[in-house]
Each structure stands twice: as structure tokens, then as C-alpha cells.
Length: 435
Image (cartoon, rainbow, N blue to C red; front, side, top):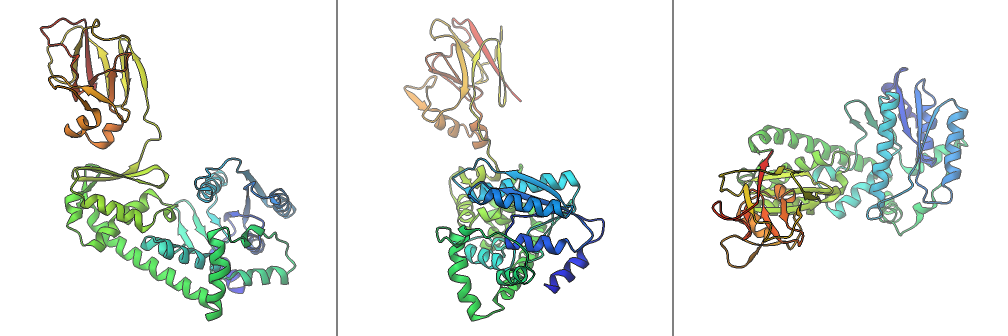
């Protein structure tokens, strides 16, 4: 523990403000007790996950500890979870809370009690699951987050060393009994793998730490090279696929990992090498328009010679009754009195041949339209593909129907059999103006 105190003494100054993630377990209470030895402002941040019967007692314990020592106590409850990925959802909520406190108190440090055993477990799990070079390195002792530093002072300590320190000094803490359940993947690594490795070498945790640091150096070196070539790969807010195909496979993978790291700055553990492989397959495919769904509603999209990795909109649904005009995601559709325009941006309709009112809505899977001058119907999806409409634009493409849901027009792209020639009989003229 002496080494930790020396490290903290070099790191901290009297004006520092530290948000400390404090669960009440031995790790976080060890860190909190150590920090109390320094003349700094401490914000004790406790998150109640509401998942165990002991949660309320732990919250009261952390609160009493903080207030008895004149520390600032901040509390947050997680009341609802996304049960598709509960662990990640809880992590996102925790760090959102921590970041709010950093802003509130203008803190320059966020400290967590991750230790050497945590690092070993993380590395082993990612080796088995598959990850990126950065992912395989686990986590770092210090990370510069621009306005503050994320620091893990206990990264060189094993769990047994922490428990020994706490017990020898009669310091109180709570034990989460769920940590001993083999129902959880991490626990199986903790209970089965780590004892074997420690039996082989009592300092194996330091070997893992060195492994982590070496991989991080390698990743930083490779990224410095990627940064030198990335500008040459850029095309239309994305990356040029023909140039990506010219790269060596190793470098191509690193470029993709670099792009993914920008989309998952704090959640890169969600990405495995399988995701990278899917994107590389997309790049090398002969098909012009493809999409790969990634965690947290991120998508990789191939649009002809451009690769984009972006946030996908949660909801692109819309449904409007058209009177004089209506705004749509990419422009406006409006009634006009006259036009000699014969393009797909104007449609002329005879109200006696359709059922009013007119509806403007988003595209739905399975949509079909009886195309003008074409015998029979055609899927709207195929119409958009044939017209080389980019995938991103297809999601927001407006569709004009009558009240019987007959598709009359894909504005700017194609008209249906209901379109009337300019020398015919019609009483409705619609114009589509794109933004």
C-alpha cells in the first residue's frame, strides 16, 4: 500500500477535486480511505443499482462514512434497465452520473477502484471473446479525458492485498455475495482462472499489467501511422472504399478499429473482432449498397465507393395528411397551381381517380407501386436501388399515397400510373423541393 500512497502523493495537490466511485465494497472503500489521507476535496459518488436486498444498507453506510468525515456525498438510483444488456446499461448510467458530478463540482479527477484482478479478468475475457488491439489491452491506469483525468490508483494491487489491508486496519466494507455466483461470466474467470494463474506465479498480475501496457504502446504507435494516412482515405464524410481495398489486411483492420474507437470512446468492449470482420467483408463485397448493424444503434454503411460508420436514427417514422404543404425529412412537398416541369419532382393527379385525402409517410418494408409506363408493380425498395438512392437517404424517403394506401409517388425518384400527362385532365399538382 506504500507504493499507492507514494503514487497519490506525486499525483495530487491541495486544490484537486476528486469524484470517487464508491460502492461500499472493499476495493472502493480502500481507495476512499487512502484518499482521506490527503488534503483534497472528495465527492463520494454512490450508485444504488437496486438489484440486491443489501443495496439500501450499503447506500446508508457509504453516506454515513462520507458525512462523518465532512466529504460531499452524491447519490443516484438506477430504477430501470435495458435487460438486453443489463451490465452495459448500468455502466452507461453510472458514468453519465459521474460525468454530471465532474461538471457540477469542476472536478479534475474521477477515480475508480479497479485493481489488478479486474485487469486480468478483463484481458482474459476479451482474449476468449475476441476484441481489437486496444480492447485486448484491458484498461489503463490513467486516461486523459480532456477536462479531467480518469485514474485507477489500485491497478497494481490484487484483491487479496486489498482485503488484507482493510482487515488489518479494521476498516469496514460490504461484500457483494453475487460475486461468488458462477452464473456470471466474469465470476467464472475470477473463481476458476485467476487462482490457477496466481498459483503458477504469485506476481502474474504484474505480468498482465506489463502485457496491457505493451499492447497500449503498440496500439498508440499504429494509430499514429493511421492518423498519417486517414486524410487520404476520406471521401464524402466517410472513407473511400477503393482506397481501403488497396491497404494491407492488417492495416485495413487497424483503420476500421480506429474508426470504431471514435464511435465507442468509452464502450469499446462492446466491439469484438467479429464486428471488424463484418465491416471488412462489407468493404470487399461486390454489392454497391450494404449495411452492418453494430451495438448501440451504430451502423456501418457502404454507399457505392464510400464507407460511413454513424449513429442510426432511433425512429424515422412519419405520417402526415397533405393539405397545402407538408415538411418531410429531406425537404417539402406542396401544392402548386402551375408547372411545366415533367420530371419526377412534380406529379399531376386527378382527384376522381384516387381516394382523398393524400398521405405522406415513410417507406415501409414490402411497399409496392404500379410504376408509370410499366406493366405491373415493383417494390419501392428495388425502385430506390435501381435509382441509386443512398441507403441513408432511403430511410427518410417520403412516400405519397391516397387514403387507400395506394402508392402514387416516390418524390424525386419515380411516379405511379396515377400521374397524368401535362396535357391531360388533372386538378392537383404537387412539387417536391429537396433541401
